[in-house]
Amino acid sequence: MRELERLLGSDYRPPHAQRSAVARGLPPAAYTSEAFFELECERLFARTWVFAGFVQDVAQTGDVWPTLVAGKPVMLVRSDSHTVRAFHNVCRHRGHLLVDEPCREVRKIVCPYHAWTYALTGDLLRTPNFGGAACAEVSGFERSANGLIEVRCAAWHDWVFVNLSGDAPPLGTHLNGVEARLRGLDWPSLTPVAKLETGVVRSNWKFLIENFVEPYHVPVVHTRTAAGQPLKNHEMFVDTDCFGCIVTVSDPPPHRGLADYLDMSSHYLAVFPNFILARYFPDQIGVHLNQPLGADRTRQWRAIYSTGKVPFDREKTKALIELWRRVHAEDHRATEQLQAGRASPGAADGGVLSPHWEISIAHFHDRVIACLQ
Ligand code: FES
Ligand SMILES: [Fe+2]
Image 1 (cartoon, rainbow, N blue to C red):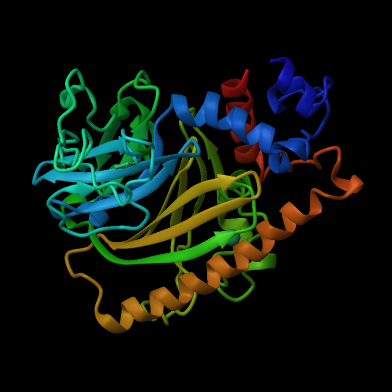
Image 2 (cartoon, rainbow, N blue to C red):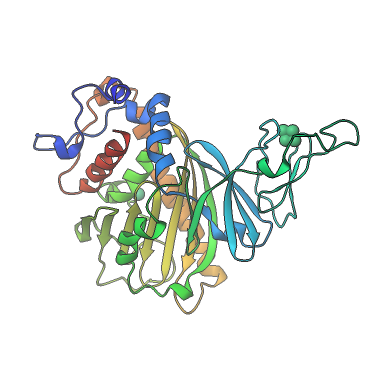
């Protein structure tokens, strides 16, 4: 608590406890300080369900996908046709990282340092030469007690969540809010169409979430790319676990389907802390994976899905990839400049939040602070 006060200033109050006409944003340290990021890792990311990867990246037995959860290296492993597991991505011998890039259909996980070898279930299988030349055994050393350390992991459709502390409420409870908002979606038709790595953004992870849940910037930042989604058509919502905005476009222009710009009704849904899903009517979904790398860097991916009976053809997929690359580039320019702005004394008070368009950000700040306290 004292550390939090030191970082944010003793007079900082989260939005729900502020008395002014407009709420103030989080102080700059919340975005720039590595100490604040460490607090988030320890008290926020480690204790809840964190969106960590895609089932499509571990689709076949033996697929391994390295990720980061609460700043800790974790790997997602397809152990068999039914099971995706998560393990701390570190060798039990001397702590070398086991996997530093995605692997496909491996039969075992072999440490690149001294070749200790693990099964896809995490069991330690081999410790070559550990007891001397051509002697793997050491009396008193139990292989069975030195397997990979498993962490709690669960999948929902194509999305894998990890809970490091192991004691968060069940994933289903965590996702109740977003499931309710997605009622009527034809889940069996959900088909991955493309996945873009949009790169490392020089921005704190919170700016990427905040930018997604407020439409206020849309007519300014996405002048062309979101030309068919006027600000006046947006409506904000805040449920406890799901927050964001909805845009309704009742008279779409006739060029529909070319994916040249956004002109469809859409639901922008965020689940605290880092799951982002956008539904575009009638038949498209986009999911962002924002992986915090530190206070001022976040790696981001976007997966595109079709949800209709007819999957997208190549031309439409290509057009969508181009559109989404442009949209993400526009957003990244904005979030990187929000980050850069935090160095200015003019941003020391955290700025102010629109009581209309940025209530979703106020809710998000309340959630962040509640976790850290
Ligand atoms: S650190 Fe992995 S085998 Fe030595
Ligand atoms: Fe945007």
